[in-house]
Length: 286
Image 1 (tube, rainbow, N blue to C red):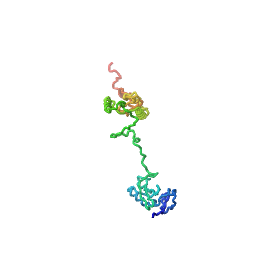
Image 2: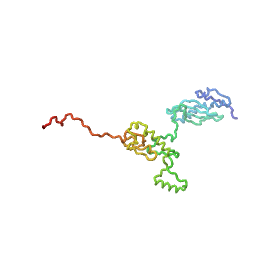
Image 3: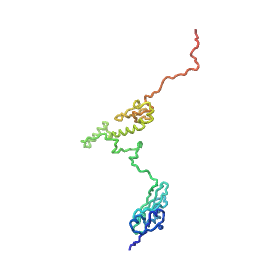
């Protein structure tokens, strides 16, 4: 005949304060309200078993003091132990234990290392698309172009009547021979974004280099204008001595290497001689 003896339950707050299960008051009521806030006494008393499980999983990480036991459900609770590893301050070992109804021993379910509120955590994970920054592409790296990149648009669109793949392949070959073979070109949005970025950067008008320049790139002989719509506002610098050489600059940009700056190359003025050996004070011949 099965035993109907009720096992005592221990208050979770009492166990967390470090009191032993024997010192905790036993609760014998069978109401659901009381049971929902109590830790199973058998699990609460299995501190040594929980520590052994934590030490086995921790290995060199170390297991510190017992921090308490928290109820997770009916006949289910978790023991917490401090982690003594110096690289994991504020972390704790969590040993989940369960007891089968009417069983007199608790078993270990799992052992994990969890952070507490004051634990040192890694920075929040940021998706790759949001981590990418300007200048992150280095030699040997590939940067895939997303399908929904608003900066690009199709370079050419096949006619709606073309359904034959062979005919479409021939059309692409002709387009490539004409120099129009780029599948993607810069969209209006992409041009606007590039213009905004260039104007607000070091190649724009709002910087110390431009304010101290004798004139703008608009009147400089080293200024090579871009083709297309961007050419109305931007060009490339061809002055090898300029800090903007080989870079895109705005027509309103400027630097000290302007072509209109010329050097004064006049003759050399000789100083007056100390002793005049050329002028004759008195004529030799009358």
